[in-house]
Image (cartoon, rainbow, N blue to C red; front, side, top):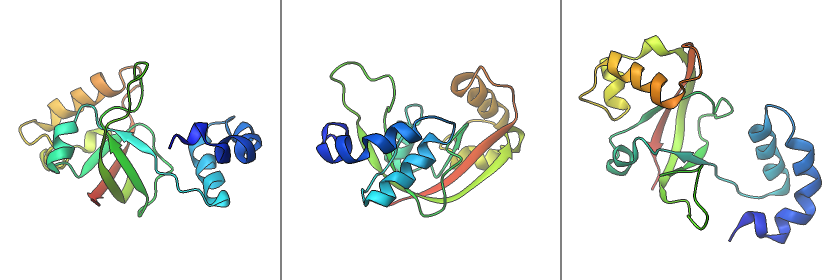
Length: 154
């Protein structure tokens, strides 16, 4: 069922949605709205660059320039692609993951062992850092990145 088309979403939550869509903590505040209303919501996390690694379950760590609201125990729906879907295209689910730990770290903290956990055993730490900054977030200056460790649920 499409939550956005559901009357439970539109009518009772509409005023709260408008209230919480302003500001930088949108996702965290929406989670609070869902919890207050007793609605189960699992966010989609895209693994477009590492779909095969997630399918094969060889990836247990991901680095993001966001997702700072995650806590250990949170569950997330891993998907192939979450944004930029063409008209009529649907989100392709991969699996459910559970967050084990979240921490901010320097992008320079990537080691060869971390490359293996990220699903790139043949890549050097330098190559991985270059890919991270060039492909994932080319407009940002190097700095802090969110290291998210997870386990597979289903």
